[in-house]
Length: 245
Image (cartoon, rainbow, N blue to C red; front, side):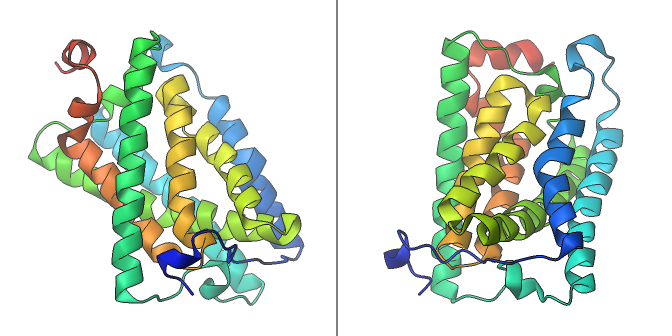
């Protein structure tokens, strides 16, 4: 039931949360993106050291995922209720490869289209890219925490809650990833579109019943590959060299 032949079926996890779960769904859907919009423009601020940003990102992401887990525990729900369950090896590998490839392709196309349209990338986007071995290891920590905790919170908890309300996993994925895109507003306009598309691609294995693990793995791989140097290939050479120093 979780193989590629079911790609058009809606097998998304669906949960009717109690008040605690509903409040956290609202917080993920509206509150977190709203807080992200309140952040000052990175063009008007001095960017802090990368390691400090990495640590701050890990703490914030882990809190989001941890709160989702706490709400599940309080409501007496297993993690499998929001899609965190085992799947066959073939399904896991197939969906991981498909979601990783799709997300990277989307990142490339959107980044190139934005450059052609004259849409500038956020300085913070470049600043976050690691330089040196120690920063690369730290960035892998960010990628791992984002891969698991963001998927658990947004494409697990939020998606399941929205599906229980909207009764349609594909529509729920659209709504959840509008919030997921705004959450990445620090990356600029192109970054919001990239995050929305990437999020929807990562939702595919969850909606068709393959679960969260392929989405978690693909999310980690996309972030890690981009941070370890693939971002230079995605950004036009003239723009890349401008910010690489």
